Length: 182
Image 1 (tube, rainbow, N blue to C red):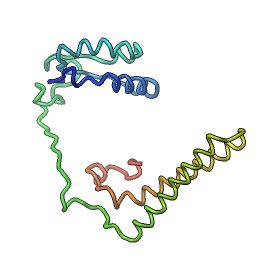
Image 2: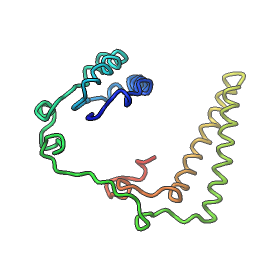
Image 3: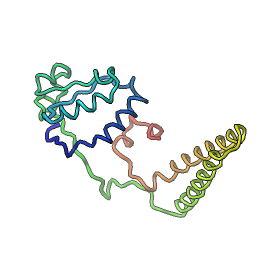
Image 4: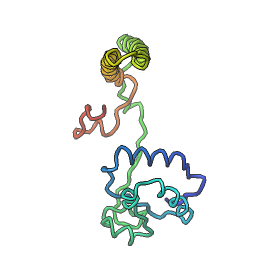
């Protein structure tokens, strides 16, 4: 957190994220280490801590220096820049013409986009019908219809995706399944 200042503290966003995380994923949090937080962060933390469940707040630790961080994480996994011995340097490799493996836009792409536009309109109308349903039976009908359209939209996106997005490193890896990205 080196360089953190009040200009970086978007408390409304932090409050929203904290409430969403706490409501939906409290069991997923093992531990969070906030390393080298500047003194001003103590004031921000006092506000944030009040928004969190005490169990979640207890899983957040603050550390200064490699020795303190080393109490929780083995030095071999701490980057050299933070005082550890890990020499790995993550390097961003921007896409280039050689690595841009998007499919060229063809007639099929045009059909898929047209189909998607129609599906989105149907999905919106089905959602409106579902919201305005007069009874439980009608509501169940439109919800089922909406879910079917949603599944078709997902399938449509999987077909459009190779035209609009370059594969990332993880997708090109033999250890990652394409299905895991959807």
